[in-house]
Amino acid sequence: MLIPAPFVTFLAKEITKRLAARSCSIRHRDQVALHFEELVLDELSLEDEINAEARALLSQYSEYMRHQDVSYQDMFNRVKRKILAERNVISAAGGRGSREAKLSRDKILEISHKMASRLPRIPGTRLNRGWNDTRLEIQRHLTDILMLEARSDRLAKEKITSQKREIPEGSEEWQALHRTYYEDELKKYGVHLQREIREPAN
Image 1 (cartoon, rainbow, N blue to C red):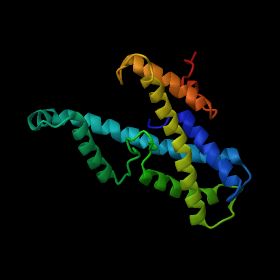
Image 2 (tube, rainbow, N blue to C red):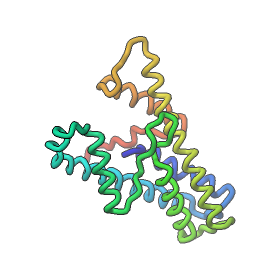
Image 3 (tube, rainbow, N blue to C red):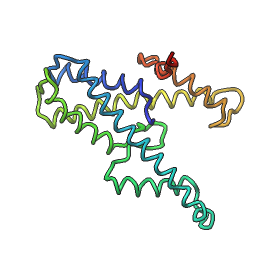
Image 4 (tube, one colour):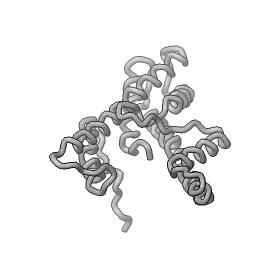
């Protein structure tokens, strides 16, 4: 998943809190936050589903990639774009820059539309401003909060590169350090990734 589930929970609660402070009268904040959380998780799960479908289809193109000297990543992107077009889905994957949010601008725009459309249908919730003004505010909050996650990821990577010895990116050691530093950064916002690890059922 592009964004860890605990951060999505934080994002949903934070947007709800910010909207309640200005744009909306919200009687049941937990209910609104849950709606937002489920909406974002559904969008991220769809992205995971399409990525898995693209990887499965790539097995059919192994000979083509070898003869045409096409890299796995390039072919993956071609196949994924085709699936997205066929299913009329906006890709959630954002830019690769360290200072960019992991969700694309188009996906943030789409999610802001869905959140704003859902708000008036949630019992105990009323918009205090025009619908589009509320949507624009949601879009702004989404972007700002997602940048906190991007910043945490960037700082984690910077801590690794500041080590006295070089640690190859993607190696087992690099991934372990990144997880530790990334978790430490997210804890500053009250986000604990350890919650993703569930105890086995008895």
